[in-house]
Length: 439
Image 1 (cartoon, rainbow, N blue to C red):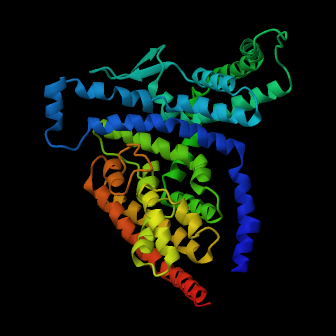
Image 2 (cartoon, rainbow, N blue to C red):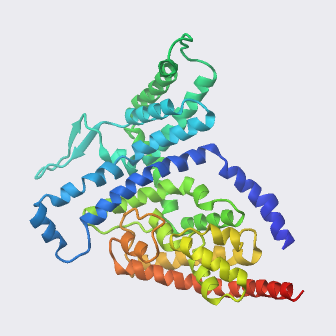
Image 3 (spheres, rainbow, N blue to C red):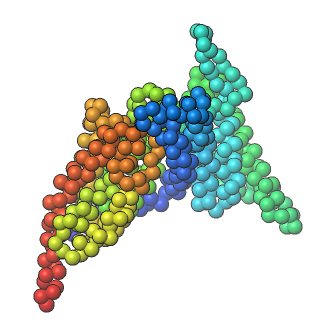
């Protein structure tokens, strides 16, 4: 046990803490999180548009007219289709804050750089035509959404790094002391903003001379596809799950750290499913953010809600009984810090074993069930991670009962894995209480 603690405290935890404090990963995480409230709001309207109730479509069409679905989906487009734009601002803002430079201006320059790198044209195939028509002067909503997410992330980081270097080297226009601060900051941003936008403009001109034609195509081919394969594979997802659990086991927020890297991949997969679901087509991606939030982490990281039920109904020690009563409320909303730090699971060699094993087994079982067609895949609906069990499975799959059943099965799996380890821990605590009362 001492060797285990030494490894976690001296080796793993130190390295993990450095990764957790890395400013670029923190900025990526915070920028992506900034998009989530809008996506959840859009998901509410997406659910309303496709409620699985017999006769719902006919009722809506008769009450609100034939265009009711198109109008109900307006908020969906206004939220999902600007996630890259919001991320461009949020990532740059948070990164500039960490450098203590003007965050608002850095965010604005990042958005401008992203728009400058984006070709303002869309192509479509007219009815009966054999060749697509390109329309210029139009901002493509697809590239403002999940398809442009990686470009917005890269440009947000690069533009902010260049912005802060220019500011810190004092290559700015300085105004007299009597000028209001807001006006002075505007002039301070002129040189950095001009250099950044000129650099992006020249980069775009160069790429347009190549076969890639746009920065979005470059990033999609060289970065988006490989990362999509990694995040969309069972092996890659299992690695992410194990890393999350290892980080939590050492007291670090594993979901936030790993989410800074994997979050954009899973978010892109979620939006692809959303577009297919919205068009009435079969969804293809299994590994989305909702796959992990709703199906794998039932009760929080480690799927600890089943462990809470062990404490609540089967504990012999007073400590475990009391902890179960305190943890069941938060656990139903997938908040498990009372269990993780109160039991504790952190730095506990006995309980770390099921804490890591349970999500791994659930990931494999859930993936296999969805891949085989026994369970509906996530429909691209951004159900909040705090959604109570069973409700979350039903809603995230677009109103399919198989999603609800899958969550229930996962809870049973978690219970069966945690139970023997819990008995050992509870027996130990009961013996401690008995010996203490006998003194």
